Length: 234
Ligand SMILES: [Zn+2]
Image 1 (cartoon, rainbow, N blue to C red):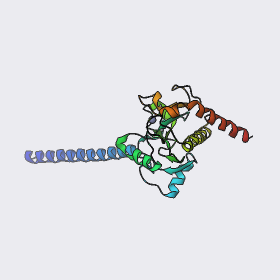
Image 2 (image 1 turned 90 degrees about the vertical axis):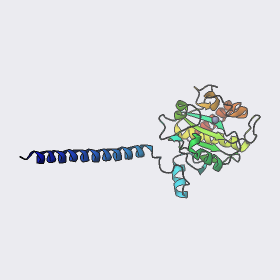
Image 3 (image 1 turned 180 degrees about the horizontal axis):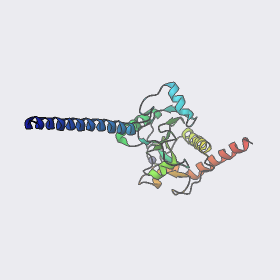
Image 4 (image 1 turned 90 degrees about the horizontal axis):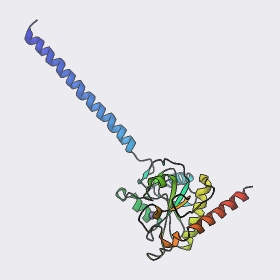
């Protein structure tokens, strides 16, 4: 054989191997990219305004007391523990349900709660109960807890909440307990209870002196409702 021709053939197959390698590399990058995107993709209905039908579908899997839905991307989908607690927060402001939703929609805020209650006693849903909200500065608690932000009628001072918001808070807690099999709410003043507050986990005033001083009262009122509902079903 003619040596130069040999060399040429050798070069051709070498080039073929490089082309194959490059193609394999591109393919691998595409597959990895798709997998990464699928993992990072947010569930449907998150981060956008929903239609009436979609809103009804979301509410059907959560509290029927809900009247407003805007699902926040600031959450872990799904939570990694069974719901066994409720954690109370205050908004540190008098926000509407829409304003709270807009605040939780900002990804760089890194904050959310499952529910919010405005001063008229209406309920907003921001993170479905199946998912973990970023509310209490404590992942372990938030994976176990349904978190609720309550609007303040007094800004500063005792951070009082309205009578309507307070009553809805009791109704919502009872509803969450009933649907999730929490038999009673127990407030121990520490993170071991089934009723917890934000300040147990972080250097914060949240939920403010007004709500904090009423935690045992809230637990009693919720348990009374649960007992009434339990006896009326017999
Ligand atoms: Zn809080």
